[in-house]
Image (cartoon, rainbow, N blue to C red; front, side, top):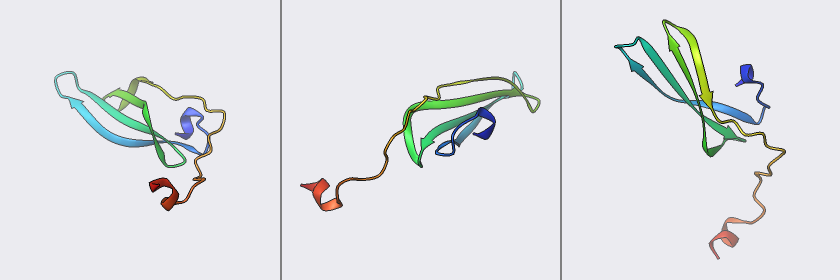
Amino acid sequence: SQGLGLEANKKLKFKFTRRSEQRALSHQHFQLYYDNIKVEGFEFSLHSRNGKVETANGKIPEFLELNTKTKISVSEAYN
């Protein structure tokens, strides 16, 4: 996350690795989280061969600022 210049409240968390033995490729997939809340639809992938990254792709939005703190109680949410 730091190498991509993400702010402290944005983190890429590792999801899984997929390997293609025929092409000697490895694909690492990451999910974006904002204040430890999963941001649906925003993932990032690294594609490497022999341990060296060849390409990267994905979506990382630029948020101005999001308020992730709750404003209602649990009981209010259920009513």
